[in-house]
Image 1 (cartoon, rainbow, N blue to C red):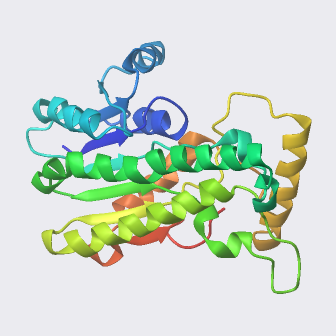
Image 2 (cartoon, rainbow, N blue to C red):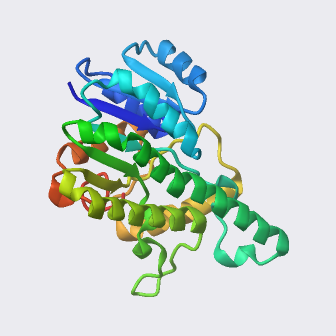
Length: 273
């Protein structure tokens, strides 16, 4: 009876994990959300009854410790899969490049965005893993997966060898997810001897927004997709959360201890799209 706990399960990829895993009644599925009520309401609307939702704010060490206590009665045999999905995306500054933060006002915006991203994407992952690690060690699969991004690969951002332009934006998100990847590698170094497998897993380009992009953002997105097609000519645009989760699970199911600490895509390699 495999068990899964999804940190950051309120929407997008996190909620898609709940939908996908709940299709198998043999799974024990737990979602962690800062505000459980809306998630529980959505599950009810979708007719999903075999998912447990517990409260938890991944930016708070105390809140994650409490969430782990609440999960113990639901996981008598421990936790097989911990999937840390919660993230700070920083939409307002996503399409800005490094030099766009030159003014005093933008410099403060950069400072605030960087710290919020650090709290969620990096420290929040550490708090999550440390809180649930005793349950993971008690489980059978012992897999810890942090959802990252292909943006954390420098080759996606740098100019191409033929001189074609790179992608200067998404600086904060890319940098903090790169830091997350290093955190996952450090956990691998410490926990390998205990049979724990850690992975930084990119979900691909996934449409998780419910909002219509502005014309300016759409222009930047078209530029971004153009660069993506330079590396991946067959790229046709973002995938859906459920399709991404299906690909991610195949990668997770195939992990062995030899893979611990790696940074992989939803294809199980370095193909980010």
